[in-house]
Amino acid sequence: MEFDALLLSRLQFAFTIAFHILFPAFTIGLAAFLAVLEGLWLWTKRDAFKTLYLFWVKIFALSFGMGVVSGIVLSYQFGTNWSEFIRLTGGVIGPLLAYEVLTAFFLEASFLGVMLFGWKKVGPRLHFLATVLVAVGTTISAFWILSANSWMQTPQGFEIMADGRFEATDYWQVIFNPSFPSRLVHMLLAAFLTTALVVGAASAYRVLKERHHPPVAGWSESRISLAMAIGLVAVVAPLQLWAGHWSGEVAHHHQPSKTAAIEGYWETRSDQPFVIFGIPDREAQKNHLEVAIPGVGNAIQNLPRDEVIQGLDAWPREDQPPAAIPFFAFRVMVGLGLLMILLGVVGAFLLWRRRLFESRWFLRFCVAMGPSGFIAVLAGWMVTEVGRQPWVVYGVLRTRDAVSPVTAGDVATSLIAYIVVYAIVFTAGAIFILRLMAEGPVAALAEPAPRQDRAPGTPLAKAPADTTPGEDA
Image 1 (cartoon, one colour):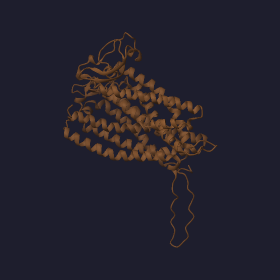
Image 2 (cartoon, one colour):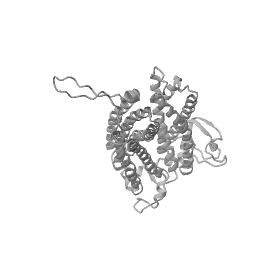
Image 3 (cartoon, helix red, strand yellow):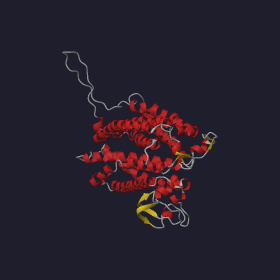
Image 4 (tube, rainbow, N blue to C red):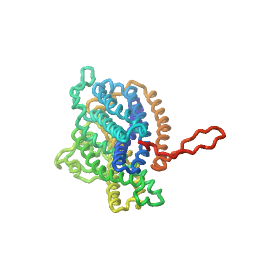
C-alpha cells in the first residue's frame, strides 16, 4: 500500500464523512421525534411532552450545528481533493447538490430559528408547523444526497461527451436511478433507529437513576420517552432488515462485484455457500478460516438454486473491490441489526407485561445499545462506498482518475490538521451532549431566577417566579 495522493485523499474523505454522517443520521430521526412530541403536547396538553421537547431540542440544535460544519468541509474537498471528479461529473452531480441546498437547507435554516427561539414569539400551532417543516427539510436533504450518491452507484440517464465530461440526458433517470429507492428507505429507517436507540439509552439511564416510582398520576418524562423509543425500535428494526435485503437484491443485479465481496464469494458457481465467517485474502483469492453453510447462498438471496452467482474471479484483480472491508463491515451491520430486533421484541414484551421499568438488566441493555445505531450506519457506509471501488462512478469512472493533481505532502498535512481539529471540536461537542443527556429532561430545564437590578441601599426586590421557556406560547 503506497501512501500517495490518491490513497491519502480517500482516507481524508473517509475520515471527514465518517464524522459528518453521524449527525444527519441522528438529526433526521430526532427532528421527526420532536415533531411527534410537540404534536402530542398540543393534542393531550400534557406538560411531560413539552418538557421532553424542550430538552431534546437543545441536543438537536447542537447536533444540527455540528452536522452543518462537518458538511461544509466535504464540499470544499470536492474542489481541493477531487476536482477531476467535479470537472467530469459536475453536469450531473452539481444540480442534485444545488437542489439539496435550495429545497432542504434553506427550509431547515429558515424555520430552525422559529423552532429554537419562537416559543414566546409565535403561537403554538405556528411553532408546531415550524418543527414539522424542519423535519420535512431533513428528509428532503436525505432525498437529494442519497440520489446523488446512488447515481454514483448505479449511473444512468447520461452520456459522455467527447472531452470526457458527463452530461445528463434524462434527469428523471438520474434522480430515480435503480439503487435510489431502496437506499433512501434504508437510510431513513437507519436514522429513525439511531435516534430511537439514543433516546432509549438516555431515558433508560435516567430510569436506572430514579430512586422512587413516578407519581400515581403518570409516568416520569424519562419513562415516557423510553416507552416511545422501545415502540419505535420494535416496529422499525424488522422493517430495516427487509429494507437491507431489498438493497442487497438491487446490488446483486447492478453491482455484482460488491455482492461478491460482501458475501465472500471468490469462485463463480451456482451453489454458493453462506459464509458466516472468514478472512478474505485478495492475494490468495480465497477466504482463510472460513466457516460456511454449503449450498444456501442462493436461497438467502432469493435466487434459484441453479442460478450462477458471480464470484470475484469474474473480474481482473484491478477491478475487484478490497473484499475484507465490506465483508466484515456487512457482518457488523447485520449483527447489530439482529440485536436491535431483539431489543425491540423483548422491550415490547416487557412493556406489555408492565415490567419494562423494573427490569434493570434490560435497562442496562438499552444503555449499552445507545451507540449501536451510529456504528451500524458507519458499517453500512463502508459496505456501500468501499464495495464500489475501484470506481467512483461504478463501471464508468475510476477513483484514480477523479483525484486532484495535488501532492501527497499537501494532502497529508491537511489530513493531520483535520484529525487534530476534529478531535478537539467534536469531542468537546459530544461530551457536552452526553452531559446533557445524563442530566435528564427536568434537570436540564432548571434555570436560575432572573437577576434584578436595585439601587444602592434599597431593599432587595421580590424576585419574579421562574417560568419554563415558552410558558406563554
